[in-house]
Image 1: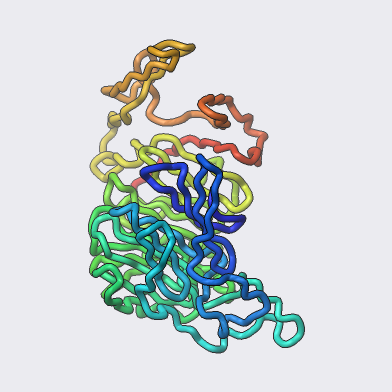
Image 2: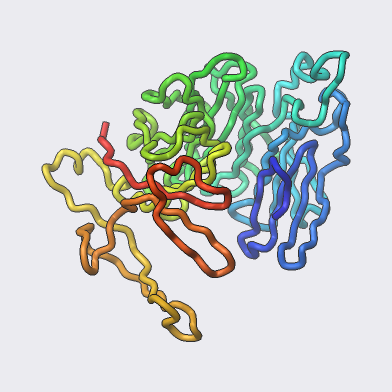
Length: 393
């Protein structure tokens, strides 16, 4: 795997053996797992220890974004205070933006003052902290800086517009941008100010390419400051928020939120993704977790909750033959679609009803129940938690 302890990772969708990953001070690598060859593809020379950010040509954040275009896997992006693009796996780079930060000189000096000047790249400020390309429109690029600026390009980086929310205070960190998978004019962003003693969550939504923004964090309490926000690719307006104290869900496009915590440890959730019918979250120090089958959540509407009784449609299920059945010694796989959520013979349950953990090694997978007393699963394990009963606000 490319990168190091703090890296963003991009996986080539054509070949999962090829990964791209960053590291501090702008280090960037391409790794081929098949050959175990790692190549340095950094945009620039990256040994600037002891030098203040004001004297560094390209300010790469400790966890700078690395992204492959969802429309063209030959296009690789990375960000410093600029957006960089490569079309040859990092052999060369083109800068496609101006400085998209405030670049306030007061924030670019040496940390620690004149005493020790402990500058190792973690202290660099005025950087692009969040970056995304719309899955609906090729070349629609969104950036968010760690000092509070938001920009949009709709022509692949040829021109950029400052679309920072008018209510956003300077030095707010944009922690994530989520272009809607349903509408190219819609985007969501998460932002924090906890490092300035403001522990409120900041989530925003635009429906007009950033010309106007609306705060959408009603129901998320103080202390649950914002880490990431995602929209369900299946149901428009179904949102999931990652916060410092857990996961939240909105059934009405951010107008109201309610917790989706369940048995998830009270931990900082740094990011989450909707993968097919599951939600996968990454916590800070408490492992990776997954919530199985959100089909029921996707079907919750006013028309459903107003009924005295409703039968939910379960997700398509995969049935595996046990032992060494099937041809060639591999398990036989049969695609089945249940017609109801009734449990029992021939009817898979609509959601997971117990904790379980999986450990993968090669092609084998062993799954076992995790007792309620377990609070922290071992590393390299994903733990699953059951879907809760939700109320429609």
